[in-house]
Length: 172
Image 1 (cartoon, rainbow, N blue to C red):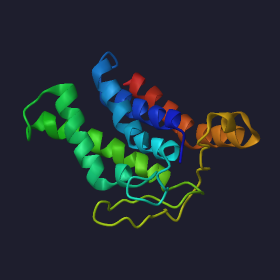
Image 2 (image 1 turned 30 degrees about the vertical axis):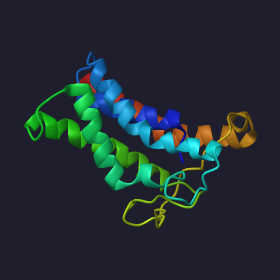
Image 3 (image 1 turned 30 degrees about the horizontal axis):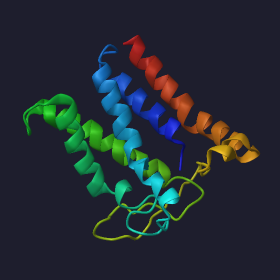
Image 4 (image 1 turned 120 degrees about the horizontal axis):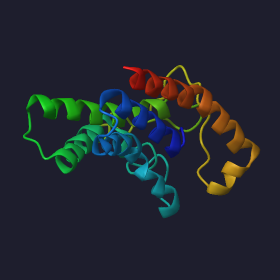
């Protein structure tokens, strides 16, 4: 999985590209949509098995949860009437960023995959192309050789493209 920091960078870059730069509420919405699926990271500390329904990359990384999360966040952040043009715009962004989180996790060369179809199936999937290195879970591991390699990999795969997306959005 990419680090929660890299998921936030991706969300921020999309937020910048799709909003006015002063819209802090939309930027926060974008970042939260992109990082929230990793709430299941606490499963490691609660002793919940990785491959269980609520284990890491389980239900909270599913398409179904992305939809529920985006509906909830749009309601909390924007208080707009459902099924209007603006609602669909925000809903699409929140859903897309949450689901992008799961796809990025499925592109890592580690772990058991993502339960995209939970709660209907707990089968885990990895994408055939996996350029991302799995992130450490323990903070102390970030200060190891593995942590250094992960950060460099994420800078190349996620931060640089995100930086260019922000740069392009600032030029328009």
